[in-house]
Amino acid sequence: MPPPNTSWPLALSFTLLLALNLLIAPHAVHAQLRGRVGPTTSTAAKRASKVCSVLDHGATASKSSDIGPALVAAFAACKSGGTIYVPPGEYGMSTWVSLSGGQGWALQLDGVIYRTGTAGGNMIYIEKAKDVEVYSSTSQGAIQGNGFEYHKDNKNGCRILRLSHVQDFSIHDLALVDSPLFHLFLESTTNGEIYNLIVRGGNKGGLDGIDVSGANMWLHDIEVSNRDECVTIKDPSQYMLIENIYCNWSGGCAMGSLGGSAIDIHDIRFDKVYSANCNQMFMIKSNGGGGTVRDCSFDNFVGRHNAYTLDIDANWSQLKKAAGDGVLFRYLNFTGWHGSCSDGNRRAPVNIVCPDAKPCYGIRVSDFAVWTETGSKELYKCGNAYGEGVCLKGGAAVGGASLAGYAVTTMTVASAPSGWNAPTMAADLTTLGLSSSIPIPPVPTTFFPGATPYSKLAGGAAASAAAAKDRR
Ligand SMILES: *[C@@H]1O[C@H](CO)[C@@H](O)[C@H](O)[C@H]1NC(C)=O
Ligand SMILES: *[C@@H]1O[C@H](CO)[C@@H](O)[C@H](O)[C@H]1NC(C)=O
Ligand SMILES: *[C@@H]1O[C@H](CO)[C@@H](O)[C@H](O)[C@H]1NC(C)=O
Image (cartoon, rainbow, N blue to C red; front, side, top):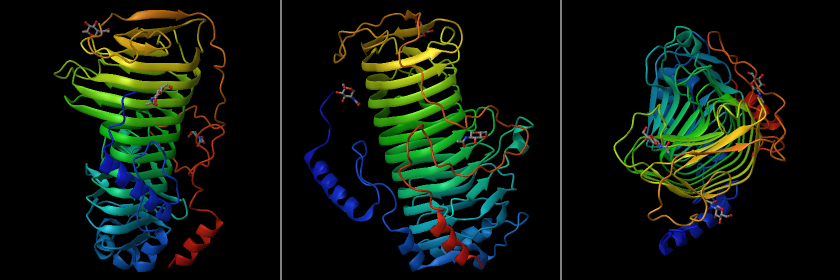
């Protein structure tokens, strides 16, 4: 393990942040994060300062209306501090909104917004804002993208929600359903907390659940169903903790694809990820390029009926080869992987293929027990990869300079590894829609076998009563 690259002034401000966090944030800071996450002004303080209801800015609660202009107007009135409020009810949305700037505002979405417009882009785009909370106080707020209207003709449309350069924020207690394209896209976001969220998309590629880049982000207690990214780290990203994730029929969680020449991803931890009927349990995908992915851990993964399992593929054929020797992977830990995969002889549950010109090192795989659901043997494959466990070449776990590349070696596992059988989730998906409307699901109350979410649903009894009082 290399020394932490924290300089003294940074360490000092980190201590201050920690102290602040104790005063403001409801959650403790986790070691993986670099400081506090979430909005700096409380939900109640924002409401107390000002409430800008869309109903007072021209909206009508009707699926055939357009909430777009009213959202823009309510935002203008509350963006310097207050709560933009969408009361319970159904709203159509035919024009998209860009909520740019502002500070100390919340978007309280207790109603359901139905996409009716057909433009590309993003239904709701939030940028350059600080101290923001996007949530439903009843846990029943949702955005229904009705993507099936495109997907049945093999077409795509807009994204549902995109945040860019937003800091000190949270998104929680919402359902994002059937996006015509990506569901939640977070780029260059910092100090964010995303939780108690359900994403349910269509059964085809390109309909990503959550893509995130930035720093100091805590994503937890999230369920994604779709056929592409579940929760995926994009470049550049640092200090992120992703835990209690349920990929309930999905592409699976990943990093990538990493096509740049200066990839900079480090200090990311995934913990307690449950994947059923996914393309992979975890994949890091690149092809050429440059830069580094380092000091990350992937702990306590449970899988069932996934095509790929642990897959580092620096020769990823679906990505056009980028200029450069390849991305350097070093100090990546994979610990506590259990469950089964569809066919471990056809698709090796361990596939660690690093770049030919940049062998990876310090890769550790331990307590790995994933057995095949088909046949009686499975394969582990490693190429250009050094570290400890499975088929990794040992002896150079902490090395780095001048490690020789080597061709893929295959290890055959002919009996079930002990302890592979892991608990499943009661409600695993068996089918996923594409050509018909996808119902809005409730926000679940569990996301990993045996794990209790960090926060209760906002829409408990007290919260629902408060929301009812607000109805007008
Ligand atoms: C990986 O595991 C080793 C050995 O337990 C530990 O020293 C190191 O800190 C871990 N690295 C990460 C990034 O978790
Ligand atoms: C990666 O792809 C290149 C080009 O196809 C090939 O020559 C090389 O052997 C591959 N590396 C590994 C480790 O399989
Ligand atoms: C997983 O998806 C299926 C199908 O939509 C649904 O019936 C099930 O309730 C989901 N599981 C959970 C925990 O939400």
